[in-house]
Figure 1 (cartoon, rainbow, N blue to C red):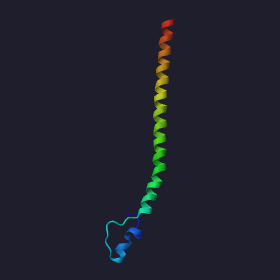
Figure 2: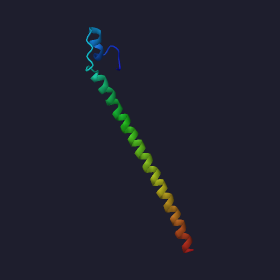
Figure 3: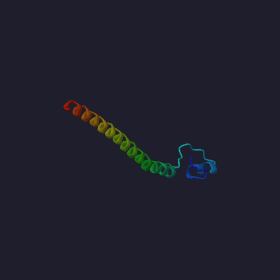
Figure 4: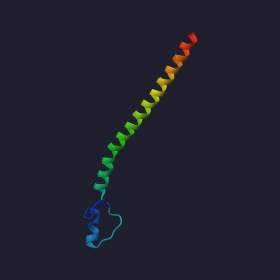
Length: 73
């Protein structure tokens, strides 16, 4: 539970011990805040992966150009 005085614990103060009570607004708020953070993480990971692969491809092309230039000379 996120808080001691939240809606899920109101039953405990009244003597009702129903386990099905939940703090849905607080849980959904945490979920809502996690979505932008995870989206930013996915975007950064994808950008980094693509950048790394493009750099490796450019290096491979430079090496192939050196080999082609060496064969022409």
